Image (cartoon, rainbow, N blue to C red; front, side, top):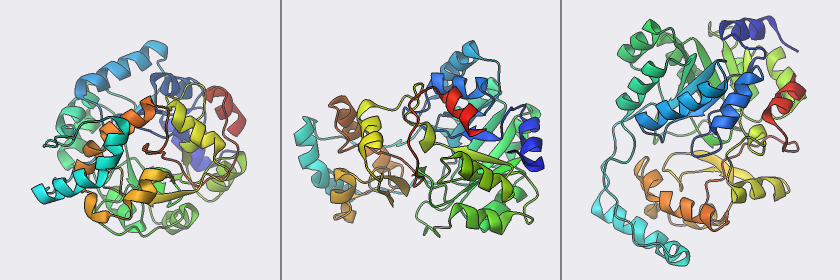
Length: 348
């Protein structure tokens, strides 16, 4: 079922369905998943926040070798990097020493920069000229907005509150992803250290419909045909879905990550800062549970994200989900293990 708003949004991006397959950086958003999603009439999304400009261009080129259909590239809006003191680093090293010993990893040496240069990444986006540029953690600066407009790139920001949605509309976006507390992965909260208001997807949608005058994309806890219909009937122009695609044949989800998704009886999830320093929702595991008992050993984002990268990589390599960031939402429903294209067909 597609509403008028959904049809208008889909037409704007030349989509068959009002669906954004969520950008899932760090592996799940593979070239194959992005291409298959776009070929099937949705908007495939490149989760490029952790990628260098060169890697972003190479990824996009591989997608375009497979399809000329529209796709989006997603990045993190940067914030001033907080100072990380020697004592904070020492506490983090001591707090994770036993895990590195268990995995046979050396003591890490942490220094800035902790993340990719956003301006360099954005220049790569401008060169690629995807159909849409999506972003989280804030509003896009005016000069970046103007540069994207000159290249006919649609801009889609992410809000977790009505206030953030208002700020995005004022910044001249083309659409807004309304990310409810149910969503898996990083919370799109503007303030890195801010409190999460934990607004549910449909409550956030209800608070914004009629007040915001750009297409609204509902995200968080949407897994089934019924969920999609409910969101569109409630005024969403489209839905964004990520968890539903994690076990698809084309997803780059690691084997232990996928195993945890498929074997967890109820996929018990919660938000945590222990993996990256920013709030994000994932399936509970050993690292999440044990590290939350020692908050002084968790550094701010993005330092913590860089600091735990070796643990996550080693965990995946050994086939263990104990130290992986198992991002997943609260949505219920059996995870589809066939092609992403067939899942999209089934949803619409």
